[in-house]
Length: 394
Image (cartoon, rainbow, N blue to C red):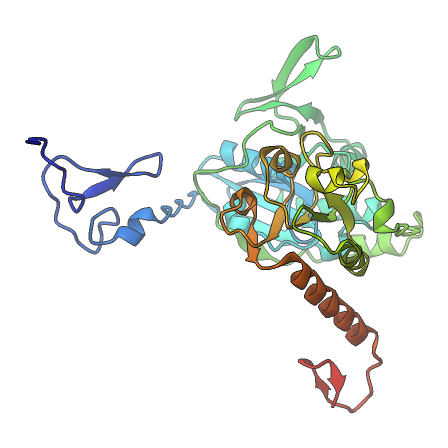
């Protein structure tokens, strides 16, 4: 006879730090509306707890963070710069974020208390004088104690050095350690480590801090400071931006591609797949199975034994998602999977999974893209109404 007493699964429970439900062994608690961990509110118990708002006194002291955005978002390096300012800020300090471009991210979640967007200075336009003038306008408007920027090779590092040189400000570059009292970086070719008190401008190396914060900022949106200096430099003509050369997506190396569609064993219509790639203007990738089958060349293989990619959008058609393939796409921002198997490993990695046949999805997507291009290219007749659903003049 089994004498082991079974624990009642309906007993009160708590959510452990690991996120798992743990049944309590003590007295049963009385559930009420304010108890998010009670048995009476299981959905609230599993929902992530809202992060507290960082408390600070407005107008006392400010730290200014400057970074370019990429299609409305900050990359991980820029997020770390904002987090660094938020981590070291005390109750007397506000974090002001100047975004060169647009920002669709949640500024409060980034740790910023105030946000200023300057869409006219977005990439890929090369306008260093205008960007330096924008920083100068924000410095005049907010009087920050220090400026923090990511020390990258895509514009922010160069911009920070330009501003420091023109403003005759002290600067620390390639900073790998930061706290409320000092900053630190490697010196003498990495053979020694140097520290100093905070300079006027701080350029942070990647991974100096974690971008994950246990709190949120105020996230208040502000208009750019009213000044004529940015417009003045726009009309100065000191620099001529000759634009960027548009390359065929097929000529772009997978490691540098920003938009990739990849085929796996579930793709049988290779011609339709390549047609979709041309219509979308996307680079072509493939799984190891598709390459081994001879459908694609070896340089198109994505995975641990192929190419590691960091595209903003990666669409996988008919790819189950072996460990080696998932390792190759771990740095992609948005992964979309099209697969008939809802339990495929790639579904756990994907931000969006479409349970459908790859061939039918590719054909429908190609048709939708071509129709959208025709609508965009169609001339607009003055005085005529437009049926947006059908894309024809009414």
